[in-house]
Image (cartoon, rainbow, N blue to C red; front, side, top):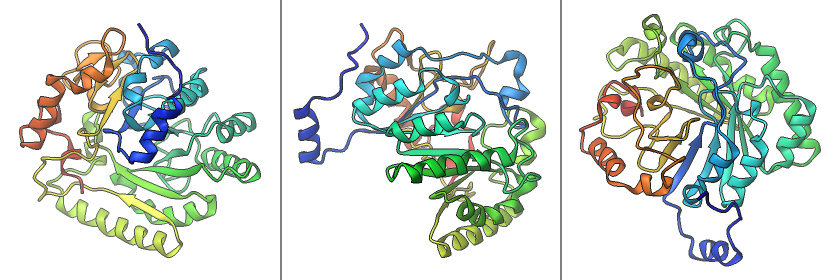
Length: 340
């Protein structure tokens, strides 16, 4: 039976606030759809299109996450698709907030109408990140089908409505994917952030490589010269952002890191796929048909209690093995284990 969608009772919330108890999960990331209008050149949705499974997570399935979300600080509504395409997006956000969670999402920005911006501000969502791979049209060209100017206009539209409605609870971020071929463009990120009025930028690199030719766009531990150049650029950008009163966060693989930890923090986070699968992260549950050797699923919320799966022996062993330097085969080649 699916759990109730009621909010936490008064005494539940009061005891949490009074005791200052930290919930055991920092974040539950939920892939509510794998549909997307973009055709980004680095995305498996584009490169593996014949095997791609386009689907939505049903609202009743989302309700079954209740035991898990009651143990989480944040619910992030996003996976391999564009979350704002889901017709039940706002109801899912409301259910997560009823569980006492902060709620965030990442969007490509292509759906940002005036009405949608109004609803986002009114929803109580506290963080919306916009995806970019560049700081102008040329450097952002890898995001095929999602014009740079359109994303900027979407941010400006939401920013205008946020200010008009005094939505001080809502932060706007840029989720920036730095590709090696256009790494110099990150130097323009602080100025772009200030122009658009966003609160922070988070820079990541390509850690899931769906086709061999994209390996050159990633940053591997052995590519010391490439990593050194990227680090210089990111340090300078972070310094400039700080000078402007903005926050810019980044991570790069460190060849000296032992690889016993993961940037995704699987000790305190998990990923729920569009089919209900329960996994450590997005990379272990790419929605493809046929064999996928990188797939790692510990249970499914359609027939398992998600909290029991998370606390179960198989997942506990996965987490302990990573901490002991014995990562699961699907994690062994992932650069997230070496990012600092």
